[in-house]
Length: 250
Ligand code: 13P
Image (cartoon, rainbow, N blue to C red; front, side, top):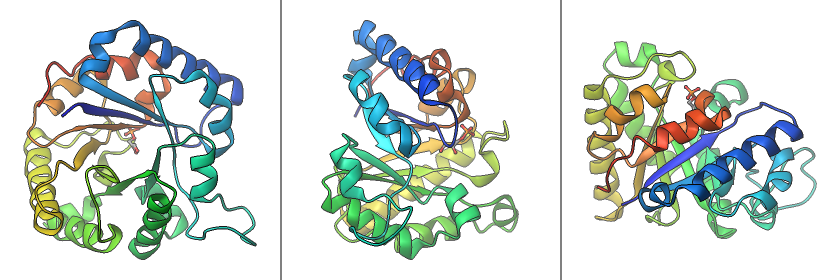
């Protein structure tokens, strides 16, 4: 399986800087065919930059960071899954911990959004992960199992779902989970997915302070099928540097 190298640009940048970043990522990916033989690439700009960057991306897929639970209509400020598909998006990040924390996003809402993403023909990139307090209480497996049970709709396949394990305490903090933490959790997520959806190769990404210097060790862990990258995805050399740490296919 190729690794998925996904950039979550969060709420950063201007149209000009988004275009520059997208152009730089596209140029690097296009100029090194070896990268594309081992990795798929995805960038997820803010909604307002999605349409701008689309024309410069050929070898890099385009995603969004959220979508509406509704199909269309009088929902001021919302953006539907259909609109994102129409703009050329193939993926939508759902249930990021920042949306859970700051916008009260629930597993139920994430599930509804995932269904809209599927109806629009896209892939839902569903984020799960425990807080530091939950890990200290030894609750991490229980929390992640509950999030997956309630946020992933029935009918998940390797084509319509990617799961991202992002321990909340490792996001933007410079703290990466240890290889043992990641190994244990990814194996657990794999077992949960197999029990519910059968033995299909649903990708499981790791996210949380991934950078070129730690990516090699992370990619060597079984059931790590790529990375969801925040801060380091805002610099093309770091984003591509992470992809270069993928040395072989699983
Ligand atoms: P950082 O890579 O900045 O820790 O962010 C991870 C993340 O939240 C990706 O969705």
